[in-house]
Length: 132
Image (cartoon, rainbow, N blue to C red; front, side, top):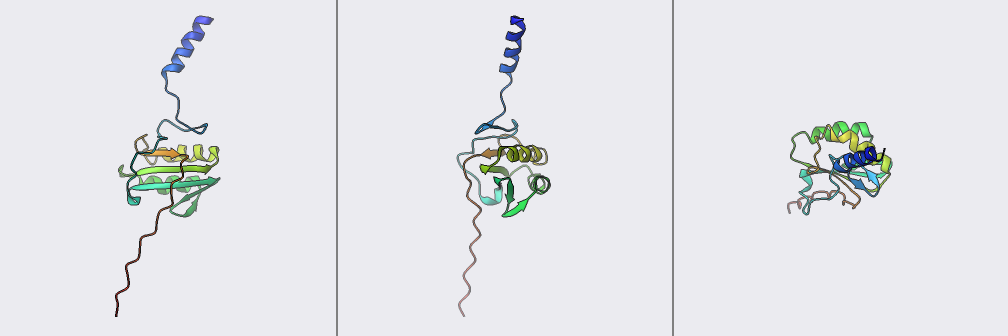
């Protein structure tokens, strides 16, 4: 009996645990530590989760719509995907991450969930009007 418990605990110890975000476990396909330098806005997609609401490009979305639209934008494999979970409910983050990781072809190097707030995308400056 004790031998089987030792073997079982050794098997569980060999498998690395899923990443934790403030006690909220996400799949191993997500990184939880942002890179030291984030690319320009055009090369990253930030999804803001506020409570139970999901926003992408300032638009309120459902989990299904986010998976369809963001997954299509991530298909080229070059951009980063960041879920800003700083004001989120854990269940929403877990559901969203699970829905996005397949269509977005997530790896821990491309997809991140963070409790650190990510500032909203700045609007581009409009060129000065020509003087008459």
